[in-house]
Length: 173
Image 1 (cartoon, rainbow, N blue to C red):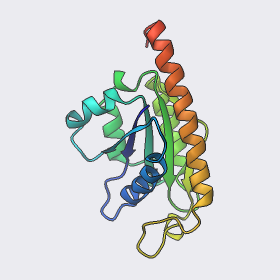
Image 2: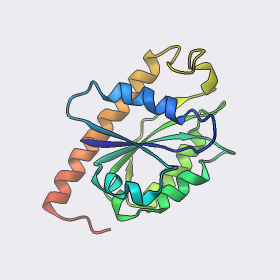
Image 3: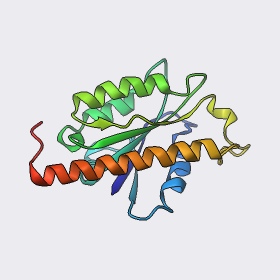
């Protein structure tokens, strides 16, 4: 599976890169996954081939004002067919809601783009309390690691199912 992890924040001091690195550490030991990390602040045309070639996506997203960041919306809207009939997972973070309100908004966006979102997510509630003093590692790593394992397994299942289905009959979106 070609998995693209998309960093969905552009703020200075953002946690998306730290959390994206953590997620990459969860993915890399798994056989059969080719991982690419993309950043929503990069010019979309520079990433078009990577977005197109991915079999599945994980969006690393903070919650800003009960939703997701504008630069992520601009990034998502820069593509259309690239998302179709592919699975999307989420790693969210924020305050008390852990970014889950951002995820719920993104589910609607990806449904419109004919993508399939997986049910299980990874969520860091009160994100600043989950990482060590350097901001690098989860203080209590077991629960988020297990949530990531489940989400990645779901993405793998959907990526294979959709790839096999598209080989038999092209998606008609």
